[in-house]
Length: 119
Image 1: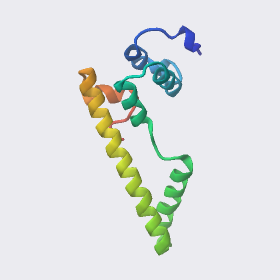
Image 2 (image 1 turned 180 degrees about the vertical axis):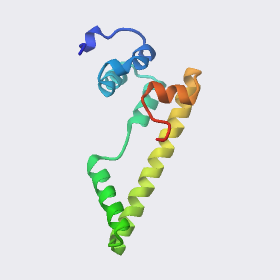
Image 3 (image 1 turned 135 degrees about the horizontal axis):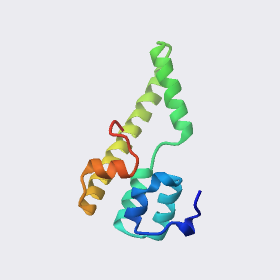
Image 4 (image 1 turned 60 degrees about the horizontal axis):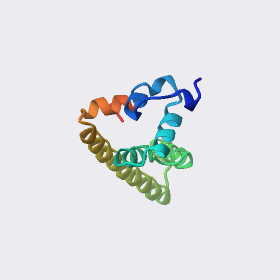
């Protein structure tokens, strides 16, 4: 693996080739070095739910499917689902703005960032 000192070029070029490196590490390094609207958008795109929240979410989904979900758990599942939906809306808005800023299609930006289309 290359060190960050060996990674040179514009951040667009690096992101395009980020699959050669540890993608998130490269992106975070770039974010720290490039204070701009694009880096703000990349930060917004990378915000997600914590691992603990995802674990709880999947546990609640399993309970719902097994039809053993309590009323309290149902409310928690709705709360997490709402947070997930809101995060996805913010992420998509940031992706669209980033695509516009770069003069690229949304699909191209998502591919460069390694975000699956079904995301």
